[in-house]
Image (cartoon, rainbow, N blue to C red):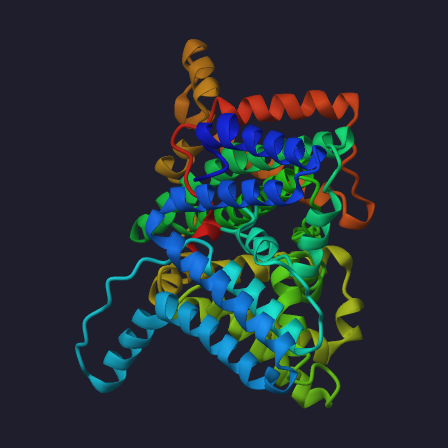
Length: 481
């Protein structure tokens, strides 16, 4: 099931919020958790019912391993190894088996056939959450949860498919805290604001840029340099509004249920350095890799050379986590190299004018997204060549057509305005408006979601606009990871 569906908006979401609070308010905490688990499994199973046993099996396996660590403290290390092998083995089989076979065929000249595998929805996210749980148990965290509480946390429907990557000690205590309580009007209002903003980001903004980006990537040989640059910029904006939109919706639903999920974005496109970009982009993934990979590798405590190696390792791992293709590895490697350069150059970068620093950072991020979006390294290099040959010209009409909103198109035809020019104008308005939004967005430290009368009206407008535009909306990009 998807957030941007009528079934979710008008059935599952209101029923889940009402049922959760009614049962908790009446003092039926365990029943409320059981209800939430059923709702979450229904949400997850709607995507592909065949993956429900996989999710439930993963939950039971990790819960039992975690319990065994508490009961058998001397066996914590072998149990941790068992848990890591189980989780990484599951992720590796479904996500990387065919990638391994393809590379094995290339190296050995063999022709082993690909496995018929579908990627289980959200496997990268719920696997990382459970790895964090096991590592924390190994480090001595008591984590005294019931199986029902743990299952509710892992399968929590706002974030089970695409994050943010929340930790057990953030979510479960909040679920316990609402037992015996009724809903907070302010919490519901804040949640509605976040949800309305998020669905507008996805349905209106991300989908418009997505149409142009998809057309461009499907027609690489036909692109001149102007259109190629516009396509890459479209994907840069599509990805941000798609993923931050999902996060806003997930956090909004969490707020409605009395659970504050972690922030995942903090004005990343305002960054003046690559380091600043990664402080604001997919923050929960960065937090996971820092806490459970970078620091165990030694972090920055073993000298500059080791710090640089550790930085490259976590970014290569991050790239591979996103997808089973060398293009993702290249994307991670490019960011790792930039982070190392940032550390080595240090204060020299701070001497640059802020406008130049921003332009260099934003330009480099755009360049790296080419490899993230491409289906292969070869495809990414084809886009780079389309830009580098400097064959500038008018934007392809097929590209700008994707920015024609039905209501604007109807008005344009009624006024007998040239549709090609109207489409170009809409593209320019989308770019300018989106860049203004990104550059003027409030940082997390100063961000307030408190509902006011003016914000309530705006939330209603955004939600209504998104709901009447739901037809044909695609899945969230990060659902593929």
